[in-house]
Image (cartoon, rainbow, N blue to C red):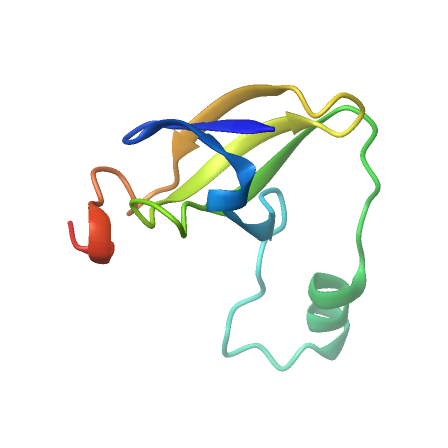
Length: 94
């Protein structure tokens, strides 16, 4: 599978680290709502089709990317920098 990094271009998936579901919202770090934290950590949906994921280009520019990938075909339809990651260069520096 190839992921096209907006900075580095097309690269093999072995250069990337999967960071998780890109659709989940983390509870407020100060929250003591145990049910909200349990849902965030343990509840998962099993999407059949396009799914937004977060990947880090760990073997390249180290940017975090929002990737839309089909879970049925692995076809990638969109790749973009996540907020705060645009223009990041090797070594994690902006």
